[in-house]
Image 1 (cartoon, rainbow, N blue to C red):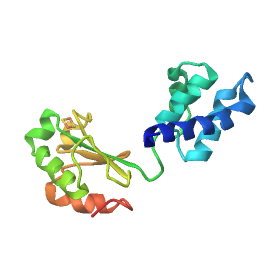
Image 2: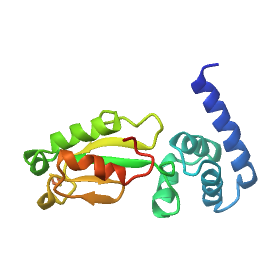
Image 3: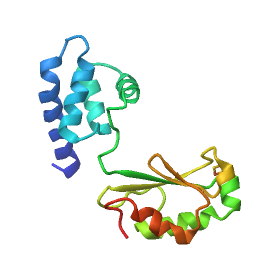
Image 4: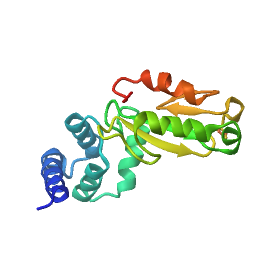
Length: 163
Ligand code: FES
């Protein structure tokens, strides 16, 4: 069995365990999601798929609940989404260099996560605050007027981010 299949088998067993007491009971999805988050610290996508199958509900229903209640998390704790804006205003003010510096600092390219899964780097097209260009965000926090040489100190604020 490949690692992926083993992993999937483990997830299925865990989902069976979490869902079994709640199958067919009203309001069960919230209780199941609590169980999932208690087990994993967040609600992993693969687990959501298996929960949807087990409870015979659309996956979209799960995401509706997760996004409605702030309590549920879609990312592992300590996981930072680092976004660099390459929209026109930011690009014209040098955000491609900011992206380069961020990728260099994290040791990954846009679209990748660090091997420890602490950070994911992505490119966005306009964050809606063009007056602050160039802009990058880490999680919910917005950094304005970012220059490549500021990137190391920005990332250093986040524990566990590679230096
Ligand atoms: S172009 Fe970057 S915030 Fe609008």
